[in-house]
Image 1 (cartoon, rainbow, N blue to C red):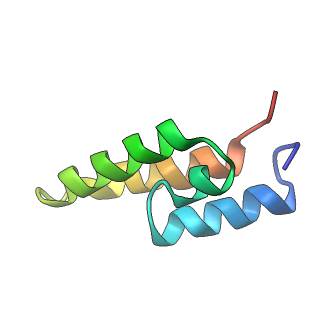
Image 2 (image 1 turned 90 degrees about the horizontal axis):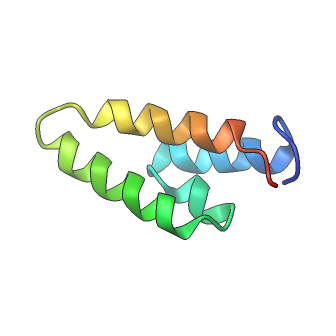
Length: 66
């Protein structure tokens, strides 16, 4: 998972598609995974969780390891 568009990022994006934050967890980014999961869960109550859900998918797909 070293560069954008790598197979690892695609898998992480697919994971985040099903559960927000799961892709970040797969990439080893625990704090952002927890934040995205909790924000999505809280905002789905008022039907705005899709915003965080999309953010989670894009963040996992576009992640570049340092």
